[in-house]
Image (cartoon, rainbow, N blue to C red; front, side, top):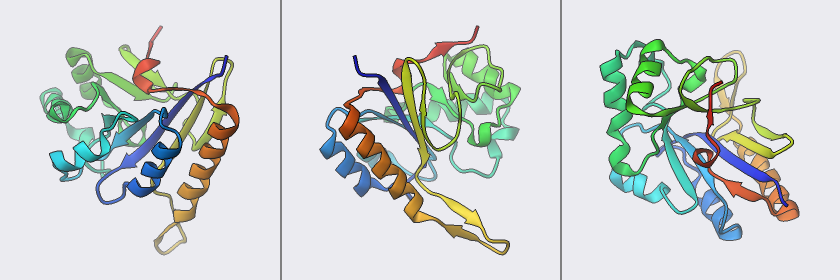
Length: 196
C-alpha cells in the first residue's frame, strides 16, 4: 500500500498565491490534496472561492504576519476564527511563527477549532503536529509530510531579497515524488491527532 502524503503550504494570500503553478499541479494530479494556511489580508469571497477547490482545504493563518494575534483577547480570537467560516475555511488555526497564546488556545478549545503546531508547543485540544516544521519532505513509518511556503526570502544585511526559484524548485520535487510514488493524498483534517 502506498504511503499517505500530507501536503501543506504556508502564507498563501491574494498578493502571492502562485495560483497558476497550483492549477498546473492540480491538472497533473487530479486527486492531490493540499492544505493551505491562508493569510487573509483584505481578501473577499471571490478570492476564497478561487482557492477553495476539490484539491484544497483552507485554514486561517491570521490576516497578516506582524504579530497582531498575540494581543487578541479570547473574544477577539473567537471573532477572527469565526470570520472566515462563511468562506469554507476549516475549523482550525495556525499561528504565524508558531506563536500561540493562552487566549488563542482557549478560544480554539471553546469553539472546537483544532490547532496546527510544532510538537514543542503544548496544546490540549485536537491538533495537527508538524513533526519537523521545515520546508520539504519528511518521511515517517506511516506517512510523508511535504511542507513549504509560497514565498521565500533571505536578508542580505540590508534588505529582504525574494528567492522565487525556491518555491518552484520545491514544487518540482513534489511533482517528481508524486510521479514516482503515486501516494495516497490526505488533507490535514483527515489525519488530526489528539494530544495525549
